Length: 90
Image (cartoon, rainbow, N blue to C red; front, side, top):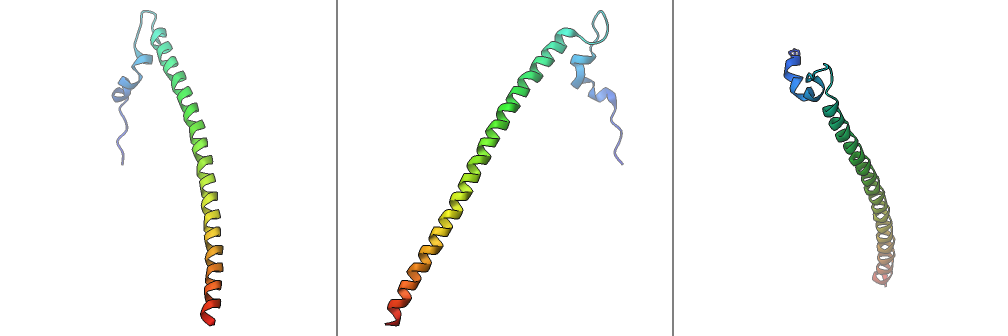
């Protein structure tokens, strides 16, 4: 059985929201900094998503090229094999 997590252990992670200031509650400056960091991370994630879509499209094009190459090689080897079999029968 897993031990329950003590909320005091997680306090350091949420210090920007839990620290007291004279009015009590959330420190607006630290909250603003935290909000800005979240917005910057959101922009980075959007860029990463677009890059992943480009990579996926590139991989799909490469896979199509691979199958076309395999088709070309198999057809050409069949033709060469047929021509060789004709000459060997003579």
